[in-house]
Image (tube, rainbow, N blue to C red):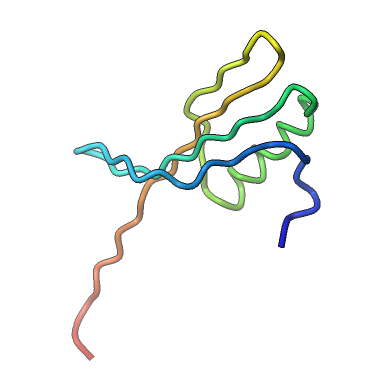
Length: 84
């Protein structure tokens, strides 16, 4: 089921599993076409940040108006405490 509030036409890549040795992050690349307005792109990225705990790492604006945005979030490892 798709979220109806997200602007149509953007492409979200699957979560990447690249890991740095010191800090462990999940990465997501979002491609936003030129026909999506700045305000729609901003609201979409704000929802990713608020509800998915993603932070903006890098963004590129291409000559045709398309954008590519890299988001990351820290991987939380849960350690089991005690045997039941």
